[in-house]
Amino acid sequence: MANILTFDPNLYFTFFLVLLRVSGIFLTAPIISADTIPPSVRIYLALICALIIFHVVPQNLALDRLNTADYLLLVIRELMIGLLLGVVPKIMFASIDFAGTVIGFQMGFSIANVVDPQTEVQVSIIAAFEGVLATLLFVVLDGHHIFFEVLALSYQKVALGGFVFSPNKIDFLSRLMADLFIIGLQLGAPLIVALLFANVILGFMARSIPQMNIFVVGFPFTIGLGLILLWFGMPYTVRAMVQLFGTTGPKILDFLALMAR
Image (cartoon, rainbow, N blue to C red; front, side, top):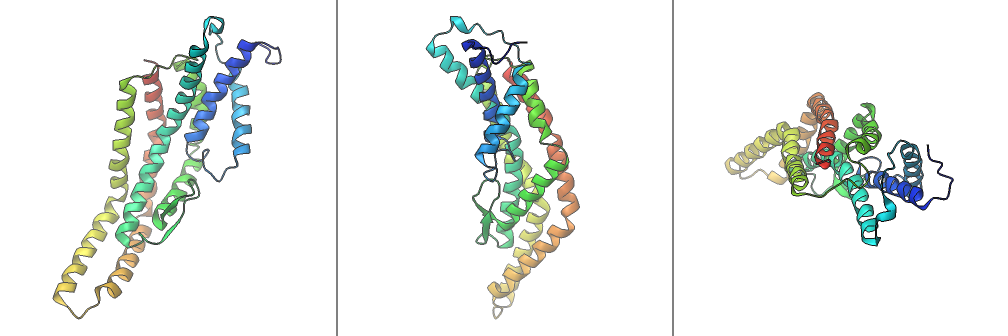
């Protein structure tokens, strides 16, 4: 086993490449990349993970034969691997946020926004609630362990400097982005359809009873109905999230297998 304390430029550059891949996944992966986590904590955690992984990484790069452009290309490749591996589970969380945003819009909460604890941007109340619920479920299901398992496995699938950017990887990410909207609509479909019918009924009532102030009646009705449906539909939502997170690991492994080609 190589001694990291020995002054060897190739050894230290190899460690730097490992640190880049680890840092990339820490920059994009959900929960770990949250703005609420201090940057110093993420830096120390990335250094610790890189030190642990470094001793099991095959150090077979012929760095002495590389020029400056090759070094720069290696840096970009390793950082891209980490960033892309973190994007895959991030898309799963984005689909949940999308479902909450659509539900909140249907309920009339599009104006009442709160700050998302992960991204620190303005989102609807329902999207923030479902985001917190998804985070808790992900941690309870040990989903955060996937990141560390993927990091260790990535060096078996894609060696240092072995990543090649190709159109098939873009196609894979494009399909994941398309699945974001499909999964989001599937998660929010029961409430979206029910609230849509409620708005249609309110429209008929407004036409048949012109004296009724639809704004006074409509907002409390849709908000109350949405909260009731959200409460009774919570078991369905939790099961759907558990199934969604169950596909996170296989999707990342599929992407790793694709990176190796």
